[in-house]
Length: 155
Image 1: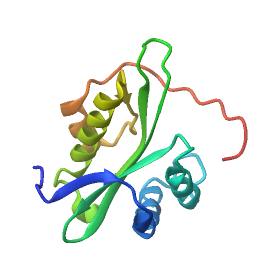
Image 2: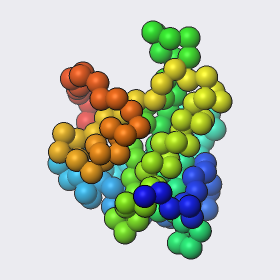
Image 3: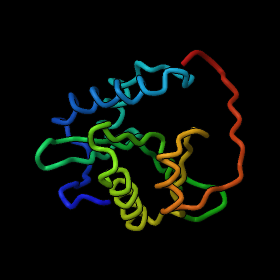
């Protein structure tokens, strides 16, 4: 059920502390995920740099402030005239889940994409993240691709 008090907006400098706290919770929930879990500060700096492709939106609750974030980037796609958006990370604090914040962030990204002329938004989730998959299957279609990772260096 979507909560009308939840709004989504571009991240602002005053959101840094809340973002970093949420990042710690986000990576703490998936300890086996390969990668550098200490990337919160660098990701924040990237998202705040207008010259960098990484962008951040924040879901907030008027009473509690930031309750979720999404990190994404848009780039040219060889099979379309329009760019595609890769939704890299989406997170909602545990106490705020089930109120529609993730849905609101996806809808916000969709609006950004419509304004920018994107071809599509795509994302991945863990095979056993059933709660997220219930939402994703309502708003998008599951594709039958496999992901392959060729690690080049340490994260």
